[in-house]
Length: 291
Figure (cartoon, helix red, strand yellow):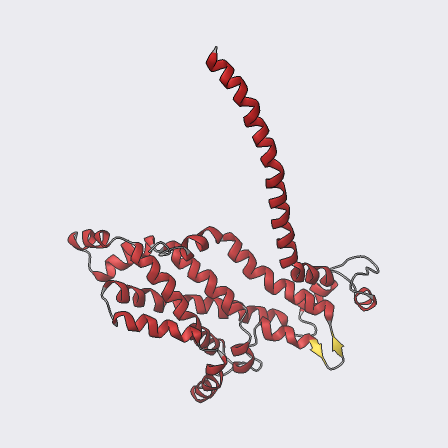
């Protein structure tokens, strides 16, 4: 009887407590949604502008004359005014090439720094300190070097420049993840007869997959959105999307509809790439955080 009475008394209190907590959770969700809306207002405005006609854009930012259409996207993708498909291809080659080259350099370098103590503590600190130097500091030297080597206005030259800038961050992430892997796993592999390279590629790399995916996403997005090196180290043959979008700002006026369509296309590609691999991004960035 006592137990039933106690249960009977506590149950309404528990239900009331749940009901009292529900409004707080609703307001929290509404606040997060409002913040997300404000943060994404520029992208939403670009989507809205890209679907409007030139007449509607000229009247008012909020007016819609003749409804919505995809004329600006057709103009941009057809390449009738500017060779935007070629700029899109250059950006894809630049981003993918930078990711591949960064990983090729960062993986063995991180393994040598963490496992063999190559360079001691100063090497990683010296490399990562380059991240604090403004990118503009390297722009003029890169221009002179690349012009002398004959790789100016090439995608390969842009890949080299972006690799130099993104490599310190890649080393930080991969070294942090590598320190979380127990050394006993590699020792067991060496006892079984595996050499250093076999251990690194067959044992360590699968365990580093989240960190490598995180590095790939970050480097891809940064290389895709690079403007400084792209505008200085390209003229016509290696122009990426970030520089090509500026061509819609002419002396006769700004082509707002086409510019908005270019913006939406150039943002959606890395956004989808990051959304697909977001769980690996979180795991990779959080590696080594406890230590």
